[in-house]
Length: 589
Ligand SMILES: Nc1ncnc2c1ncn2[C@@H]1O[C@H](COP(=O)(O)OP(=O)(O)OP(=O)(O)O)[C@@H](O)[C@H]1O
Image 1 (tube, rainbow, N blue to C red):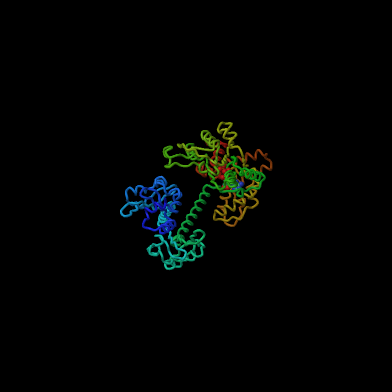
Image 2 (cartoon, rainbow, N blue to C red):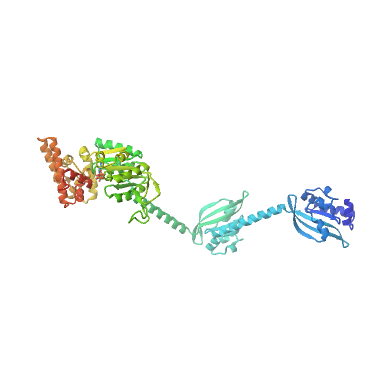
């Protein structure tokens, strides 16, 4: 059958020729299908078998339409027209096929299809598309970089240079492609890197009088170095230096502001600054150090000038929050409304005169650190309620605000008032007192620890000598005795003021003698000596009180009746001064 059909096509050839042609057609990689004028398959080569998955023995002698799906050969027989490079799916593969009629003596005797599998080819085309896409993305990146980029092949020939590098070298980047890198970039090492495959990171290279920082990285493909890419990080090291300079300047500014902030808001004193060797002071320091370890509220009690603020600073500085802020609020210094705004802060428009943009309160400023509520006994009952709420809830809202701020603060409160007596008189809330009364530091007045006076005098003398222009050598034993006998209503602050005034009136190089001290100290002493000769101790306290009253009166006279000024002269706090005036019935005098 095959022979017979073959005759239709190949009548001009001998059977040997036909056999030879078959061998040839079987050895080509394109598939070949031949049909006779009736559409019966007469030839189906080996490649056609491979591409279609059909066997020649099953196909030959069959109607092509039945044997091979989607064939166009019947159409060619009908039209007699060629069909070139047609895409067609056969099974799982796509083929590219050309069909032609076979004409013999002007008679159509059959048709032939020659086809090839283009499935793999299609995959390659799509991969090529991906590569093209990636290449143009990389190209856009290279061109948009401010750094110079150069790429060389394995032998050091430039394959690519970006616009930035071209501008830097004053060259057209396209004109250098194909040149050896040594011809284009002075002092380059790109060709070595492309050869040796060792990266050179942040190397310094002199290019046209510019000292540049360059990085050279080998390009490796399948474990083999195929070139190198060079990157001029900064076109000129001067740029880098100026950037580094700017960073250094910013860093030092930051340090400065940090230090200033610490000075303004940090705790100034530590336990080392608290002078006193008396048993009472030693014990107090140890209790305070224990309080510092935790985060509990600390309540510091003691007369004015005993060192309450000093202890508050020391507790903060010995605590884990020492790096955080230390914010002091004097509760006696401000009227109620102002104190509220000061403590809790306010939002813009919270009240007439509220600052634009609002203002954080002291509680917010103290976040992460310590808030020191000095003179807490002077706080109004209404404010006490608000404070209690914040201490309980550990969060607050600014005045006129709606946002809640969580607080992470340690509270230290101090007062020279007798809070328990105030509670009894309904001037201080008991619940707030219980909130504050967790760690109590009760600082004794100086007159109850006179053994601290020599050490305090020594420390204060040094401090004052550094502040004033004089230099006083020390204190004579008689003067020290007088200082230890006085009852110090203004405590350490008063002692400091007395020494400062005394030193200011003395000449350089002398010791403070009894006669240099203010008369009130000597009067107490004289009275005491007289007392020792016959008077009872209750008389001594009367004498002390009298001396205190006299001192207040003298200070008021010196201050022209101005109580704040008089308090300053005596070295005691205004509120303490008021209490004393009340005690001696001087308020209405
Ligand atoms: N033990 C001490 N060692 C060294 N200095 C002290 C000591 N006690 C008090 N001072 C100094 O005395 C002055 C008053 O101390 P501080 O202000 O701490 O007292 P205070 O009890 O808080 O007074 P007030 O109740 O009037 O606010 C400060 O200059 C402080 O440095």
